[in-house]
Length: 258
Length: 308
Image 1 (tube, each protein chain N blue to C red):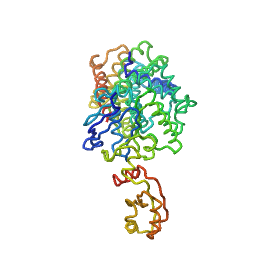
Image 2: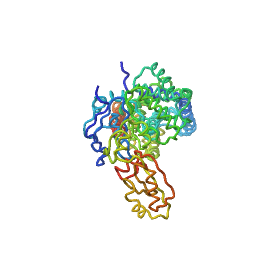
Image 3: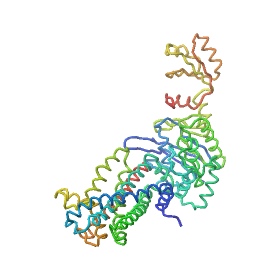
Image 4: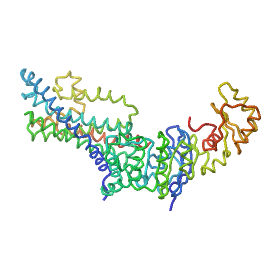
């Protein structure tokens, strides 16, 4: 029986990963260690001394960890939705070669997303294990919280790659990181509750998909209830994923089958 | 058996720009067929449509007897494509680049391993199998691309500017490999803006300009039809009066063509013409008598040089 085409693309990613896994794995371990040490323990000490009523009387480290997990997954998804896509369309043009085979543009998009899901899961598992070693989250709760975190990461990957595939120049990339990824990372309830923001900014943060992913991840990690009903949060993240998949099938085709 | 390519009034438009303007092409099995023309003539757009990698705007196209619109994947499964840019993953080894591409065709892994052995031997890169692509020379990378295009054992190869940017020796190695492939019965379709490449490789070719076919035939037939047997190139030096010289040359050969740096005179007997030039009192700084090429055909048909 023929292998579904997106799985052939996935296999290509896995084969290529044999050459890059060392560097990315070291990054996957180093990032949570650095953040949890600096923010969770260093900054957390200050926060905890002032009292954590706004965080539900949790230690700052415990409160921060799931937010960081979701935001790191988003960042990993954003990275997978930008650099490899530009390499495929512009820098190396491997996508143009792929679509000369039976692989169609939409197979590339789906295969990429499957790969992103695996990669983000691996990064997430590393994160959770490290965080559990820090005593920041019980291991089983952390692993449970991986679900919504990975979903969030893949959704961002889908949405970004759908746009990035159309880019004809590289300069958007810096702006994308500066004006989209970093603000999301900082202001989506990752490092502090969105209630701390001025009301208007808080409303914007609540409208952004990452906040919903953070809420789901945090609720599962802490065993609490999210800010809104579960289906609302889940609905927003899934909607982003579906929009990214559907838009990408159109934009990949437009770019790669001129 | 249906022809490899059957195109009638094939047209490709991007918005208001017409890249391919109603061309008729038929390529038989086993042929080596070329699209010759300058950059922007529509060669690549035509090849993309034939490769089922770009939708047809208008006209009729069948590739291996199938409609690319409805049977794109089936067509692509039987083609080997050598794109203008290598598009090799530089970080991966030669063999991995081939293996990943082979899996796109869903070839069994054992078959891929076997084919990689054969193909690397064919392109004379067996000893590079486990090396990264990055440090290879341009000619070697091009041969890896040829091997990659052959991984699915294609019936037809589409080659877009196969030797552009390579040094003469590397080009000859590549031409030799492509000739071998044709000997094995693989149909070759290639685009080029080098007349020597078209003459070396093509049984038959079309000359394209601004999206249209301006001439069609075998290389030597085209030269016979649109140029003379020989061409005399005269260089006059910077202070010479070119229009006066052209006027002086009137009637010496079949045709006189003034280019920015030299004057071409078309003649059946070059040596006789050179004697006549001197007899008329013209003293060029350099004289070269050569065989007419497809470059001359293109100049004749379009009034422009092929490579500028």
